Image 1 (cartoon, rainbow, N blue to C red):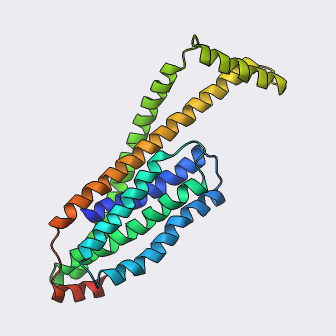
Image 2: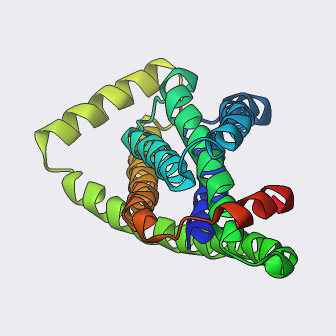
Length: 244
C-alpha cells in the first residue's frame, strides 16, 4: 500500500507541477526543468541518508518521517497563486523529493525484510509493479479530478462576475481604456477576453491547490498506517538489504 501511495506521489507531483508552470505561469521547458531539479536533487541526497538511517533505527520510523515530509511538501504546494515561481516552490519541492525517497527506501526494506529469502526476487518486482500501478491509477484520478474541479471553480468564479456589479463594470472600463490606449481596434472585446483569461487562470490555480491537498491527505493517512507494519526480523533484514 505504501508503494502504491509513493508511486502516486512521485508520478502525480511530477505531472502536476510542470503542468501548473506551463499552463498558468507560461514557463518554457528550461525554466520548468530548473524548478523540477530541486526535487531530484533532494531525492539524490535523501536516498543515501535513508539507507543509513534504516540500519540504525526502526525503518518504520524513517518511513513515517519520509511520509511526513512528503505530506508537508504537498500541503505547502496547495497554497499556489498565479504568481508562484522558483522561490515559492523551492521548499515544497525539496521536502516532497526528500520525503518520497525516504518513504520509498524503508518501505522496500520493510516489505522485503518480512519475507523468506526465496521470495525476495519476486517480491522486488511486485513492489515495482505496485509503485507503477499507483502512478498510473493516480494520474488517471488526478486528471479526472482536474477536469471536475476546473469546471466547478469556473462556474463559481463566473457566478461572481455579474456584469451589473459596479466592481466588474469598473474593471472592464479600465481594461477598455488600457486597450484603447494601446491601439487595440476592439477594446471592449479585448477587455472581455482578458477577464475571461484571468478567470480561467484563477480556476486553474484553485484546481491545482485542490489536487495537491488531496495528495497531501493521502500521505497523511499513510502515516497512521505505518505502526501496523511488521518490523523485519534481523535475519531477513540482511537479505532485504542485498535485494534492495
